[in-house]
Image (cartoon, rainbow, N blue to C red; front, side):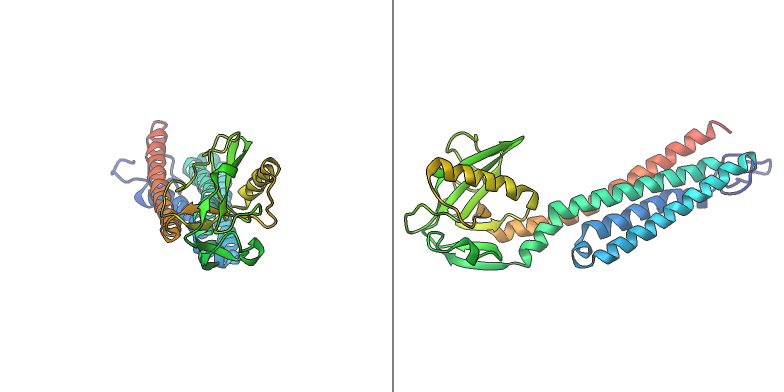
Length: 290
């Protein structure tokens, strides 16, 4: 601040480290806008419908970050003629916002939005007898309402342990047999060495519906659990399909969607608060060197 009370911007050639309101606004909102943009396109529906727009948005955001890096480099080269601190701050926080936005958005998409959209776009089957239907007949099933005879055959359940325990239990129907293509699944809800499956709504007498497992990274572990069950109980499963056992899959599907948007809103809010805290902290820290 000079003798007549004027405040000089850090984005100019002043000799002091004070910043004006416009500079603070840029440092607050530009990194947050970068985060919110890539976080939104990476984590919500547009990632599912148009991956090209996601890549374009991330490329544009990366270009903006590169420009802030170039400005920071130029400011550092000017040395005493300029004040590089805020340029460097803007570049570093923008870069962090870009990386975190992409990672957090992809995580929200994989955990919440993609399972919701996958199941929503698949078929629903009703009154399926698991003892007569075959897995290859329902490969496009997202939700299945089994007939009233369907129940979990917990006596032939099994668990496969690999850090977590991947639990499976065959869904039996009106006819007895040794072939099961429909399996209820869950993680860390059985001991892995005894028939003690207690995943999902296993003890709900009204539950006779299945919500398809959409996680590709988990499917191979459940297949291994099924193979162990085949060997242990001398049964067959030619085309296993995995479901979460429950009474009302529609409620669970909506929970995925709600979780996706709730996570998105919380992420945007937290990012803004954190950026505000960083700007305030930087302002205090830089003022000590004036």
